[in-house]
Length: 226
Image 1 (cartoon, rainbow, N blue to C red):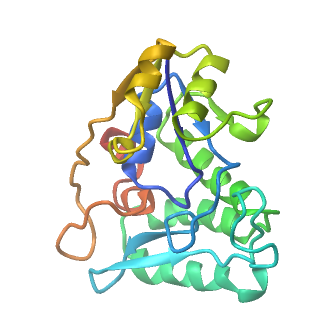
Image 2: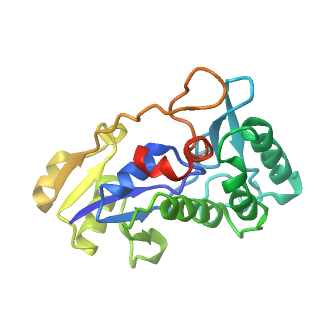
């Protein structure tokens, strides 16, 4: 059984869903710490000038910034929703499938969620269904006990879910403890993914954008690029 984990990032890129598709179980790490100025609450789209632009969610600092995704409240007083939706209309209004999917995205973004995790997971589940990915999702907040940290945490999750393979992203190579995985009898496997290019409005192709770009440009064929 292949297991992978990831934070519930905002409007993830293609590789996030490729990783999900290659797994038998995908664990959403909603109890890990939110990282400021990261893709936790923002991601890139391609604007009408053909440049990468951030699209983000305003979050509250009422509980401080050293909080988890499920503890971090969204700041709806900042009116970020109207700004985000206006940015999407301006950037993708002429994209082939904008009218088909924009109402779904709008419906999610105008909903007031209790925390950042709930918003991001709602978006992740929407795209997962759109891409016809049948990998089950499980939240780390639903798992019992103290799972530890770093490699110990992942190994404990694998044991809890009876996984014998952990599929890791390339960026975690410097953190993963190979000896710990070997001792636990869990194969540590690294994801290999080179995102394909596709027809994209606005001139020169830009890679590693939010999957919003893929969906608005490729519509039902988006699943074939994951």
